[in-house]
Image 1 (cartoon, each protein chain N blue to C red):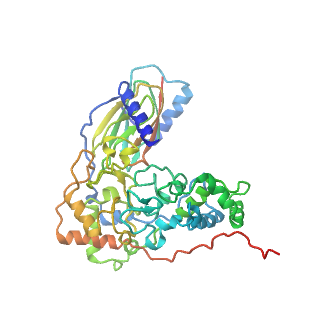
Image 2: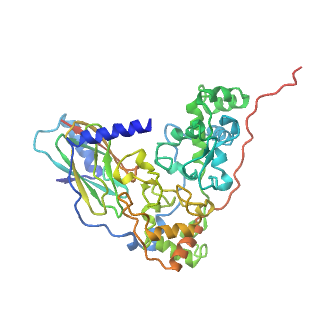
Image 3: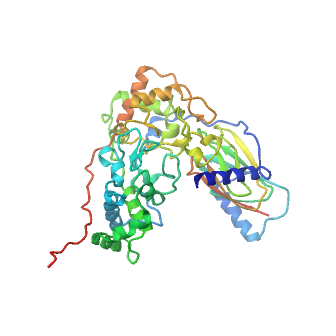
Length: 112
Length: 353
């Protein structure tokens, strides 16, 4: 499991671009925090089968969801301190938002 | 169209269940409550911004502002030339209409007219968030047969017949002229400049201890502590621009029609509290007559139902604490600057000789 900050996400994206493609291996779990009514990174690249843990580090309720075809999900309301795992099985771009706070946006690139 | 979109989303959710696995929420370390923040830290979170944000695809210009101001106040944007944007979003009534439910060409509307104050900072527009920008929103009420009832395909020739508008559009949008998109851009530009004035509260957080009374200061502490109002109404604009079911007992499902998630049933957009004392009656349905009634609603905790926001819990507030909360909200009324009215463009007249 790894926890991403904005900076580390950018570094990973850059490394992925240099490598040309993701290295083969087992599915990973990436942690994305919700803090200050923002996701800890605005963009994230993972592989098909990877899991993202959405952790609510705010003192308020959030509701992470996506309507993106093939990867739509709704973790339902998360109280402060709660986390939810979502496994992404379909390659493509996934637009993730908080239903309660629509200014919270995250794009996940799911690769093969 | 709306029901079609909802159906499509329902299908997507069903299909995605086969490929997306969501684990149940699990508990972790809870963050510290807001009440633990010092007063000085809290005050910093409520400082007014120094500039109005404008989007890159519709940057500010004086020409657009002047044109947008004309369009906003021009009743010729309605089908029978009697309603302007300002009819319902009236600057003399804190950019609302003072009614429990809005009223337009088709009669009484389903919800209270929201103010347009401070929308430059909003994420989504309308009580149910169905519009994604001021540009996207501007022509909605113009076209609605319940509101201004102006056929949009007739609006451009209608304005083009007025010489002054042809000139104003040429100045605001060189080489483009009068288009529906430019009408929306000009109105949106004007609307972004509608910002609440500095209030006694702002002078207090800037350091003037005499700007507000002791009751209001206690109210601010309650707002950020025991009453937890800041969970949704925090920040200088006193809104999180979010959507919550606050448990009002009506049948309107609000945001749930646009985004059919369990938490969005009966959810409505958090309104700003700036100048709130000037906008009675309150709530999306205009059901509460004054701020005292609003505080009573929150103290009771709202109608219990699955979508009720987690932050809505019955509160034990004394009569003095309730009065303190109202006293605090009264300090959010800004200085009432006169709102300039435009001289509207008219067709050029000639003596006819």
